[in-house]
Length: 239
Image (tube, rainbow, N blue to C red; front, side, top):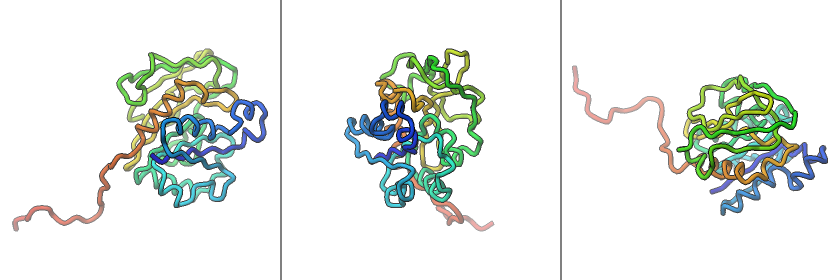
C-alpha cells in the first residue's frame, strides 16, 4: 500500500512544546508507526512545491492522511480540488483532528464542518459505539486520553455512513469523534484526537485506530462506473 501523510508542519517550527513532542513533525510520527506495518509511506508538507501534492504523487497514493490546523487558507484551491477528485476516483482519505476545517474535507462534506472547541487539558474518553467495525478491531470499550483539546457538538457534518466513536470530555461535552463517509469510489475516515501540544499520536491505541483506518480506506478494486448515454444490453422490441 502506498501511503502519503500530509501535514502543515507549522506548529513544530514555531512552538517548542510541539517540537519536543514531535521532533520529526506530526507527519513524521504518523509515518513512523505506519511504516512499522510494512507499507510504503511518504510525507508531504504545506511549504513544499505544490504542497508536495503533485499529480504524480497523488496518482500513486492509495491512502492520504491529512493533518492541518492554522493554515487551511494557504492550501491552493486547485490542489484541494485535485485531492477531492482523487478521492472521488478511489483514493482513501483519513482526516485527522483539526483537518475537519481543511478545504479538502469541507469540499467533500458540502457543509461548514464547524464545531465547539476548548483547550483546558481535560480528559477525553472515546467510546467505541460500533465494536464490529474493522476500524475498531483490537480495541476495548473505550480509549482514554489524559489530556486533549475539547471538540463539542454540534459538529456540522452530514450524517455519517457509520459512526464508530463518541467522545465524552471532562467538561461535559460529547462529540462524534470517529465517522466514515463514502464519496464516489473513495472512502473517508474522520478521527478526532490529535491536538498538537499533546502526545496523542504516541498513544498505541490511537495508532491502532489510524492503522485500521488506513486499511479500511484502501480501495481494493471498486468498479469504475461509466456514466452518460448508454446502449441497451438487450434487444428492445419495437412497440
